[in-house]
Length: 247
Image (cartoon, rainbow, N blue to C red; front, side, top):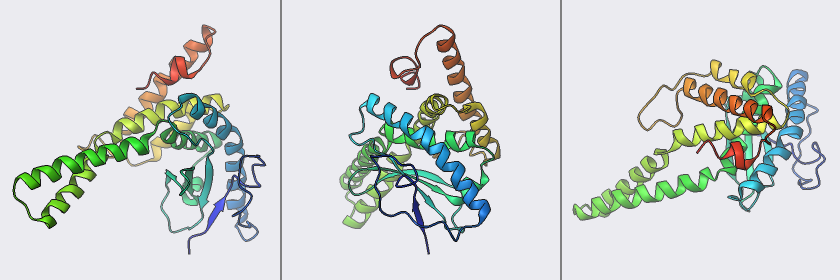
């Protein structure tokens, strides 16, 4: 059975967080408990920065992140962003992903990346793209005289194609802003991006969901160069200077 641990409740001791739903970790393996403790330390530093950036961007009406861990050992390493029924942003990490990270810089980079998806409004943009794709292929099937079943299938395919149409760009945007957030939170994004070295490289696939790992590391490196240049010139690392540069 899938078990959920809502880490932003009592663990983070923040007034904006819920107090219910926290599961006991007394039965956890000591190694897993240590990794969770490290993750909580990362959350305490990254989450406030992410909320600040979220408010600054102004694209999301709810910037109160809820961060949770799926402790099911059968789930593959993964982290993703979603919304709950009240449109609160939820960031989910599988325990298996936490176990594959080698340091807090990697944890921080992944967390900053996922919060960036919400900050940049990627779910809403993806849904809009999906609806546009569904309408286009649905209309084409209708004009071609297709039956209702075929039209419905065309709409489904169109939605899938539309949702993937800008997914690579969204990933690079999240890497860009995630680099800034991780840096502002006190972590080293270059060390964090080393996590890409252990991921299977998706390559440059047509309609693939993720860009090549090399492209992602390039974005991180360029963003860090921009950050260092801004710091050297005495410019603040803000939404107006760097955060808007990634598209």
